[in-house]
Image (cartoon, rainbow, N blue to C red; front, side):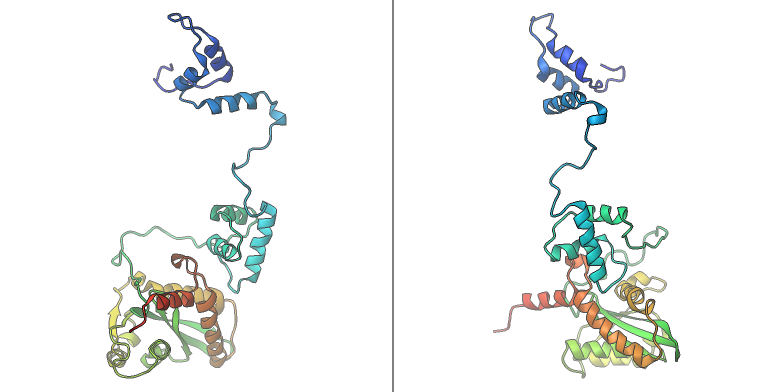
Length: 319
C-alpha cells in the first residue's frame, strides 16, 4: 500500500501477475476478483482497461460520451436548432427555450446537449455581465399561485423619429407573466399610468365599474404618477389594493421590470417608430404575440395565455 494509506494505483500487468501469484499460507492463487477488491475496482473495469491497452494508441477511437445518440446526430440537431432560431418571432433566446421549442415539435434531446451545440456553433444568446448582490429586502417570491391576484405596473420611455420621447406603460400578471395592459403616450402623468390597468380590467373582469376588481393587488414603484391621489383613488374605486415596492428595491416590482426588458429587447430597441400612433399599434401586436408565443420557464415553457387557460380549466364549474 502507498505510504499515505490511500488506494494503490492500478496497473493491468501488475494486477494480472498478482492474480496468478499463490498465497504463501494456502498455496492458492489470489485471483482477479480478490485483486480488484483490494484495488477498489470493478472487474469489468479491469477487463476493459486490459482490452484497451491491447490496442495501439494510434488505433484507439476518439473518446465520446456514452449512451445513445438521441433523436438526431449532432449535425442534424444543429440544423434543427438553426431552424428554430430562425422561425422564432423573438431574438436572443437561450438554449432552454430552444430546447423547449424542439420538444414541442417532437424532437426530444437533452438540454445540455443543445447548450453544447449552441456554444460550439456560436449560436448562444448574448449574456449581460453583472455583480453579485447581497440579501435584498424582498427575499422570497413576489409571484402568486392564481391569476388576477397581483398585477405589476411600471413605466419606461422610448424615442419616436417624428414626435420625440414617448412614455410606455405596462401591466403584468404576477402568476401567468401575462401582459394585461400596454399603453404609450407623450405624457407620463397619472392618468396615462392608469390606462394599462383599465385595459386589463376590461379584458379580464369583463366590466369597468366600482369594486369590479375587488381584492386585486397592484404592485408599483414610488413614482409620482403612481403615488398621486388620482391614481390611488382610481385603484380604490375599482376595488384594487395598492402594494408599493420598497424604495430602491426594483426586485419588488420584478415581474413588470422583467417584462419591460423583454419589450425593449424584442421591440423598442430593434424597431423605429415615426409617431405615437404607430408605436401604439405595434405595442398591441406585440402584446398578442408575447402572450401567445413567449415561453415562460417556470411554467414548463408554456406561453402566458396558455397558463391562464390551464388555470381556468382547473377551476370546477359552479353548480
